[in-house]
Length: 318
Ligand SMILES: Cc1cc2nc3c(=O)[nH]c(=O)nc-3n(C[C@H](O)[C@H](O)[C@H](O)COP(=O)(O)O)c2cc1C
Image (cartoon, rainbow, N blue to C red):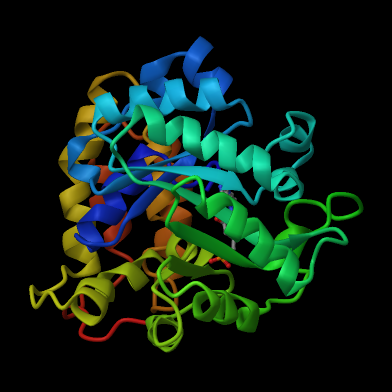
């Protein structure tokens, strides 16, 4: 998610869950091919497993970027066919590409010809008037012929005109049944559901009907949700860390980041939601928002922790 799942968030999220697949923000092909590669693609190996999400519509450029990403150690390449922002529409990629399934197939085929990694597609259930279940099924049918066998489906359509990107994540209704139906129609494909999933209970419900669940906003706004994932969804019995333990584990990371001359806020902003719903959460959040940007060392985290009681590790978070 743009401006959310940067490398600092991912490092933090990985302390909460070892097994959940994490995604980068969308990175466009020109940014990679002409921009500062370390800035756009750099990551810490401890973030793995990690999927790079690419934005673009040029098969050759996408293939080159996928190749670079494979060399750098990413675990998956995901093509964005879901974003409706004006900038993305101007570049003819994101959700506009749902209107050009052959083009998406070409992009996927080009990437697959250059890398061994899985190449997956994130799309919506529809766009503008192309919003019947049959339209989405046709899109998937055409794209899968190019060899992609995993599709993450945001269970709402997008309107290219008239709705902002934010409204396109709230206004069109969620149509989970269309995603379930897609799984039934393509049992050999891995179909993942996305959109409006707020808890691990809901995740487990969906997992009866689809192969995977992608959680966006809830994993960012209430990141401790992820702490229950390993045990409940991946069968890992290791005890999840407490919120306090996680904050303390972030201290050396923040310290190293500050030592390189960066502003602490780039790291601390991702921790603001960690105590969501608990007593003291607001004071913790306020302290970290005010002190994070002017932090000179990692004690800023310990100071914020004073506002929130320590608790026992999660058993069934979410
Ligand atoms: C701030 C923000 C940035 C996002 N950036 C991306 C992005 O870069 N790529 C993408 O595929 N989806 C992006 N999304 C959409 C989410 O991945 C997801 O599809 C959508 O929010 C619905 O899932 P959720 O209800 O679990 O959040 C973004 C969403 C938000 C709120």
